[in-house]
Length: 423
Image (tube, rainbow, N blue to C red; front, top):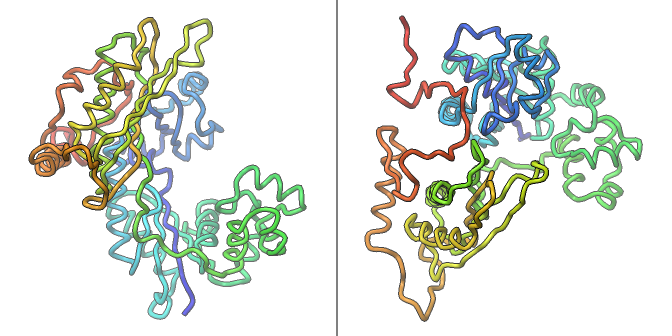
């Protein structure tokens, strides 16, 4: 039985989420900003049509923003995560197997579906259902491999005549599309590889599909060889149904203003440590190594610079926030230097272990605090409920260091007091 994959990709996802609860902005240019409202990280189709590039600093396009009436929003992660979950839930109901690839993309396994229904019709059904149930529009590419499904999805977005759904199961259609696409459009082919391939006369995706496997593997890698096989309809990449365990967890942010107060910076480190511990428990892992870093801005001339990282190893692995806060606090005290204006700090957890699957320190008693597991479980449950928040005093009550979010929209779907109002 031939494999069938469908890549479902939400269109302009962050901008679409912002427009969803603002009908007055349906046809308006909308941009979403990065942390501290620094750069444009998402654009509606109207903003793209104006030629404004992804990642451009906001201050560089202030004139265009005013001229064209571009509405800017700070990143609303709570809203985007909830809308993503709604989309993925619908896709899970429609497909036998699903791989959530990113917050706005997912691969569906449609193997065997073509025996009971037309694949193009099925794709249009899924698109209509997601649109009707969530208000988010998607593009869908269907093909015998994940790499071809990516290209089919690219075509679904690029060519309006497709109705945002492209069935690329036919070999002749595959070759016609590959001939139209630049080799740099192929999934996994980066800029450096693209330059090397073009130097060899490989300019289109079809050129790459027709390249000699042995020479490509010798000059580049087995990964690119696998890509060529995928372009020729040979499935080499299966769905990743179980998300790989992280090897490290990093929580860091640039501050809304330069921090010179020691207590402010200590509160930031505590906040990042708490968040990292929460992520660690979500991974169902324990960590033994904690690292903390602080740094000034390297982009301000004639200003004293300081950047340093320190690490410490715990006697026994833990996921208890209190243990991690204790270590992070000691590291921060050793890191701090007066006389600098700090612009960023962060915490990294590494050296992970599974519960009850590690060798304890023979010369130290187990340092796990009493009822640690039960307490951390209750804290996480309350914080995830949306009904309240439990935090550690070291995080501070009214943080002055928080990142700038001057254009933040309401969390329409996860906070009762921020529900949209209809007058």
